[in-house]
Amino acid sequence: MNLLNVTFLMADPNQPGSQWTSLIMMGAIILVFWFFMIRPQAKKAKEQKNFINNLQKGDKVVTIAGIHGTISKINEDNTISLEVNPGSYMKIEKSAISLEWSAAINKK
Image (cartoon, rainbow, N blue to C red; front, side, top):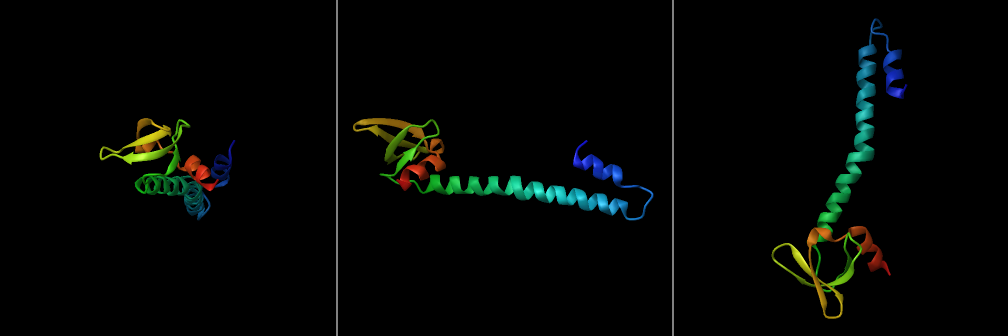
């Protein structure tokens, strides 16, 4: 049995206020779920979106696939020309740039 089942089994429906205890426990579980799961994911998605929107020519980035390169051109169709070797270019989607790896490469 998990903790939630034990909590509901302990609540006697004949006692006054037991329904409130159940509601408070459910509210606490939802609050903890939101605080530890939903909020950090939303924050991370917002940071990723800001990072993608602020990309500039000359930035050193890493794609989600692990390809390292320098941005040579930002196109109007949400793609980037990425220079992976001198004179060698790849056209990739902006959304394929990884925030974590790019931040790590820029710290060096």
